[in-house]
Length: 504
Image (cartoon, rainbow, N blue to C red; front, side):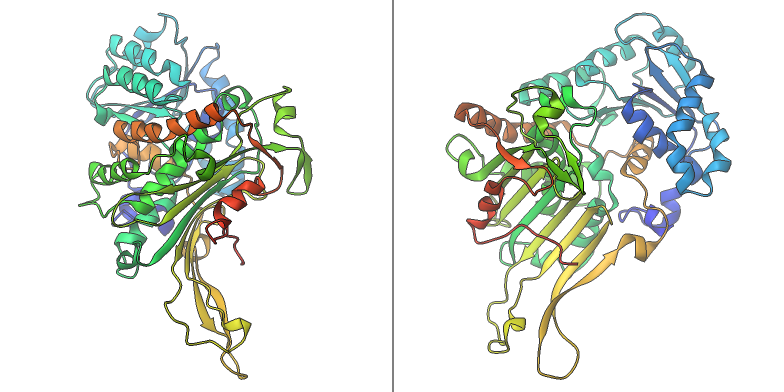
């Protein structure tokens, strides 16, 4: 049960305390996000006692169906939860009783007044989750205001992408800002809800062991990898207009970089942390026409085999003969400040890679002088590494040099001190959306992106995209099931370094 508590919470009790009844309204309530992520997350919180009777969850979509029909669809979507948690079957019917379905066409006038009448109680928290395309964010906000549903106790949650470049992000933020105060807008990045991501703050600022070493004098470089084994799935239309740089680097990877590189905040107040993340984004060295070819690699997968099964290439999945959309990105970033001067941050992400995993690897510098010379190959001193695994098998490993037990001389081996969350804390590992949804209801924006963060990230990303387009080069091909194009290996090996591979 302890793992349910964020490292930032003072107690387990605070993490699972029942919430006062609230209303949560999902625009796109029959979509993939709602059925695969949001409603299962809410069900888990109900099973754990955080969501109580009196709470109402509304699914909104254009098709006509009854409450019972909608509950039947949700029941099917929750089957995996029912198999995983022995407490879940007994709670299912009561949870489904909290669900309501309302037909609403976002482009039509009908239905908004009736929705407003149902949500007239302004004393309770009212959360609108916009699980719809970003082009609709502004118009939905306007209709909510016109219906009288944008009051002080309202929060609105918007999914990425917040635009496709800086100009479109500014336009979306302006549209939302005309209806809601910034404190009411929750720009969600589910990576920030992962326990290991939050634990990074606890590791850095809660332990005297790490923070004094967290700077260029002691850290050689940092690697951040978010690797997927899946291909397009059902996102072909969106993904081909986006690509890995916009879909993953602009949000997930840059947010992880910010948490690694930021200065100690004055407190755990939301804006104290977000202020420090913003400073990191603004300190990133620009990657533009003159440097993009040396500092970035983009790739596109071809047919191959992933996890032992053959898979088609990107173009075959897309059903087209040509596309210059990248499914892989590797880049070398630099934070221009005193703490990180000269320390490269290597980022990579891609689809159809060899393994599904997300991790941050902090590589410390070698010891300045070895006293173990002449003891054989086993005495070669590998630098220490702090490996923070976000998924799967969440945990933290600290790789150290140790003596191999036994007689026969002083033999050294690199071994990990391994903190597995599953083994150490036990129990089910909560999904990121569980924590994030409850934080929205609480009105705690700490794990959500502020407007200036989103726009600063786009301001850094846009010149990379422009440089790629100007070069006219196609993405480099790589075989599905590999770790990306060979150029990504060359990117880091030119500096005398290698991508991390967990040795066990």
